[in-house]
Image 1 (tube, rainbow over the protein chains, first blue to last red):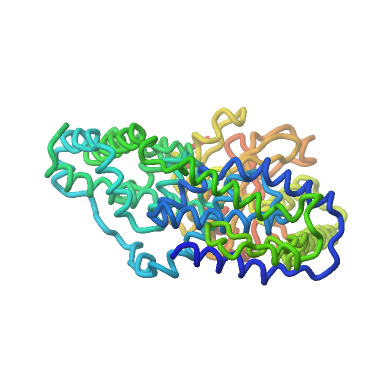
Image 2 (image 1 turned 135 degrees about the horizontal axis):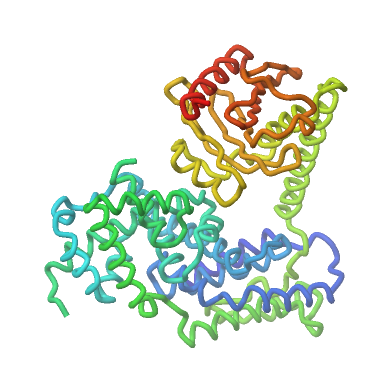
Length: 206
Length: 301
């Protein structure tokens, strides 16, 4: 029940943020709130986009974004960076991973760093038909291909291909080196390529 | 680099995230490798298909979800509004028991604290790092400052300072490559001369890369070589009249030492060379001898 998970999140935050001193400076708080609304809330759509691909569920993505948004507000004073979008996405990413760890831990334990697929030797001999096949890949096939990617690869693919972020931003969001972004993207694309080649061959060309 | 290793480069190449040097090198490879060219075509087709479907693949909250998210946010922020009650008990008591919808304001009464423990730690960490960096720079400047004899020739001093700075600032090379055919062209257009770049890997001094530096009142080429665990900076620029350096340089490498840093300087083929390192003096002399011999082969005059 998503609402339960959500309330748990709320109470966890409530416990960790009990006021320790009398509350003063209401003007400061209102400024802070306005700043948050102006700087962070415009990125809720992208945040949802990432959470939806990571959790693969509308309802869970909504819960994750809501929890992440409150967490972001809680940590807002520590935000000094240039990109509010990257900052919010980092929190959404971490919240999504916590959710996956809790509810679908097996997705994260799937070994993914080794070579999953090297391009088929046959594909090298006849590159053109393969390119032709890939060009015809329709959105349903692509959606299935994206969903089949291991979580860390799916994450970088969504941020790069769908949201158009730079390697530097993706590295900052995932807390990984740029070299890792590069190799994950390369491997994700290779896997997607072989997924589409395998499944596209069976499907009917449009 | 093997062809499978180039796959990673291709992906970054299509994203226009590959550095220029590697991109040019990849392009050169693609001209002669049908397998890699085919793979690039396939990857390009895949990108095209994703780009065409991107708006369908991208998820966005529905109108209802968007409304709920914003409503939840407003409820969370409500206690901060001027009319909100200041007692934490009041809004808790007013929380509807039926509030099971997402965004249940269970914490509505708790004003968000302006300070959080992690924030404090973050600041401490940041200040700690900055202080450490400052201290390191201060110590290094001090150590360098006192290690030079007052009579050190200015160019040697500059060259050693550049060497230390390149290690301190982590700015060792602008172009990282062991391929002299990559390093040498990199300098063209940046300098008004073409430095000779030779790879000495066979002699145990592999080329690491190159960078631009500023020595003797001019931009100069700095080549970085590896010598075991040590690095050698080799500065080179066109030889000029003796007035600039104070004295004409000998044709064979002359060794000098400034407390731990060894220098070699010489003039060859119309160019001035300064090699600096903290490697053992004998090893640096060996480097100078091998380099001088190779340079001599490039330019017999």
